[in-house]
Image 1 (cartoon, helix red, strand yellow):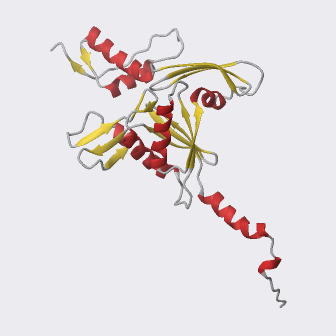
Image 2 (tube, one colour; image 1 turned 90 degrees about the vertical axis):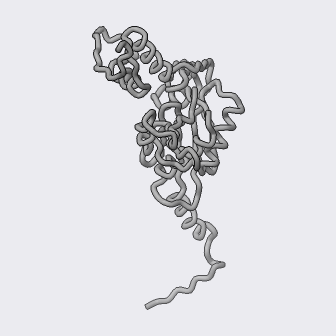
Image 3 (cartoon, helix red, strand yellow; image 1 turned 60 degrees about the horizontal axis):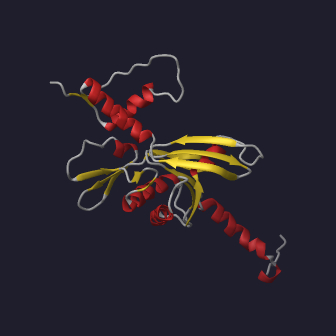
Length: 256
């Protein structure tokens, strides 16, 4: 058997760095994040969408101990005692409660990370086009508290256009209309730039509230916000369909 002696001086630097880089590549998780008023999505390049949950958190009133996030917390809306708070920490596309946003995102990031990692993740997150500097800082700070190593912001219309496959890098105009839970974004894009954008804080949440008001005013029926959202999803349509749609509604009869 031949024996080969190898000294440190005979090894090239990259031969020692390569294992370290491979460990970092395996352990580090970088995410694209859509922190919406209604729902939160987390995407990774390897697995695609790994989190798709309602932006809701349930905590104990006194201690702020997290009891549930996402679907489990949403199911508790309007059904808890005074000892439990169910909170939607995002409002109109921006952070309304920074502490609860950080607690919620910490749970979502733990779900998204496949294994315990030595490195905190980098996060790319979309923000509404009309977001102020104060609102942007609130998003960044909440994600740092939640465990992100670095946070990069991108305007939501550009992110939505890229996700929809529009040729934003070409010398032609592309128009995007993005209706979320808290904001509606309209933008015209070309050559990776935004020619025009406008953001209004009227979107899906206001649709739900309009359904509630309509049923109460015209049918004397009181329903919860979750029931209103369900009706919207069952019979709502972005385009005229030419067909009448029906839905069974459960609520409280105010006429009796």
